[in-house]
Length: 576
Image (cartoon, rainbow, N blue to C red; front, side, top):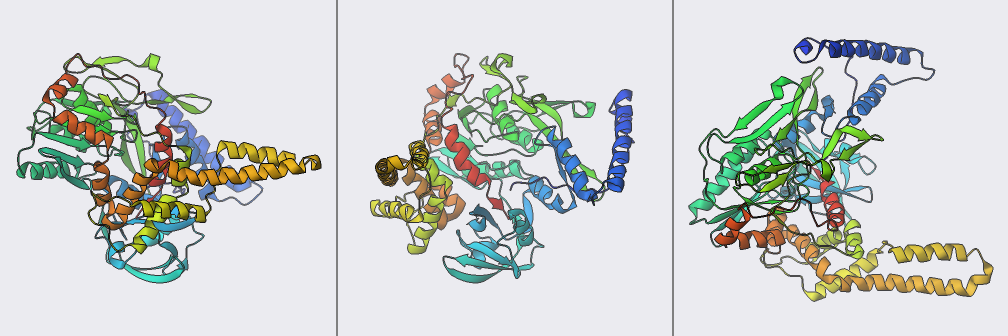
C-alpha cells in the first residue's frame, strides 16, 4: 500500500515540556521563537489575505514543505490516515482482501487474496469497480476508493463491477485482513528448505520460526534459503529476533545512533539460537530495505550466510511513531543503524543536499570494514551480495508490453476462456496460445513507439509542411506502417522474454500469489544458484572464507531499467 501525505491542521498549541532534556538551550530558544513567528504569521495570513483562505489547506502546505526538506520516511498522519499507519505497522486492517490496480484511470481488481472476502464473493482479476454502496467511483482518486472499501470486520459493502461488457453487483462481507509475513515456505530440493519473508511485521520472527520448525520436522535439512527480495523492512525488533534464530546468544546484532541519547543503543541476541550451524543463503535485491538489510548485513558480517542476488536498497535509517494531539501521528527518523562490523548501509545522505536534491554517498567516501573472518565489506551503499546475479535485460518491446498492462489483460482473458491449467509448477503456455496473445496485442492497439518510429514521425511532421515532398511523405507513411508491423513481429522475436512473464501471470489467476511464487521458483536464477551453493559444502565454505572477494560495486546496472518499470506497476497496486 502506498501512503500519500495528506495533512489537516489540528491546532497550533505545541508543548515544549521535556524538550530541555534533548536539545541545547539555543535550540530550545530557536524552537520557541519560530513557533511564535509561525503562529503569528498563520493568524495574520488567514485574517488579512485578500481572498478567502482555507486554514487546513494552508497548514497542510506548510507541513508538506517542512517534511519534504527532510527524508521520505518522516511522515505525518492526520486522523483520517491513522488506519493506514496502523496497517503499515501491523499488517492488519478491515477490508475486502485484494489488491487493486489503476489502468486508464479505472480502478480494477489486481488479485484477490486466497480465501479472502473478495474471492469468496466472486470478485476476479480485471473486474473494474464502478460503484461502491451506490456511489459512482469511476472518477474518484484511488485513495478515496480504498477508503470506501474499508470498514469494520463483519460489515457489508456493495460493489458494482464491470466484467468485460457486463455489469454485476457483488456483495462482500468485510473481514479482518492480516497480510502474512511468511506467505510461503517449502522444499526447493531434497533437504533444502525455503522461506519467503514479505515484511517485518509484529509476527515476522515467529512466522519464520514456525516455518523452520515445520521444515525440520519433515526430515533432514542440510540447507535453508531465506528470501528477503522485495521486502521493504519494518520492525527493528523483528529483524533482531530473526537474526537470533541463527546467531548465538549474546552477539551484537545492530547498534543505533541518533541526536537524542535515548536512541543510542546496542541490541544483542537475547536467547539461544534455533540453529546456529545450518548452512544458510539469504536472497536480496534492490527492493530489500531497512530490516531486510539488517538481517542480510548481520549474516554477512558474522560470515553466517551466503548473500545472493543484487545490491540491496540502502536504507540505514530507523523510525519511531510519536502520537500527537487530535489522534494524529508522526513517524520520524530518529537514528541510523550500524551492523556488527560497524558499517551503516545508508546509501543517500539526506542531510547534505545539492540544489534541493539528496546525494548518493560516493564510492570515494565509502569506508572499508571487515567481517568476523576478515572479508572486506563497505558502508554507504546497501548490502552487496557475496554472489551477484545479473538481472535479465529485456528489450524495449517487452518493457512496453508490460507498461501497457497487456500481460495482465491477456492473463485475465485466458482465465475466462480456460477452466483449468493443471499443476502450477509445471504450467507451460502452448505455442498456439502465445500466438493468440500476439494477436491480442495487435487488436488492443499497441501504442508503444520505438525511438526509430518517433524519429520518423518527427521527420514526417516537418515534411508534410512542404507540398514539394508529397511523394516522399507517402513513402514515409508506408515506412511507418512497416515499423508497426515489425513491432508486432517482435512479439515472436522476443518470445523467450515475454512467455515466462505470461505464464507467471496466468498461474496467478488460478493459484493466486502462492501458486505464482511456486512457478517462479522453478525458473529463478537466484534460487538455482542458492541450491547449487548449498549442495556444495566446499563452495559454501570458500565463499565465507577470508580469500573470497565480495563485490564492492554492482556490475549489473542495465537490468535496473526492467525492475524499475516492471516492479513499479506492482508497487502501485493498492492493498485492501
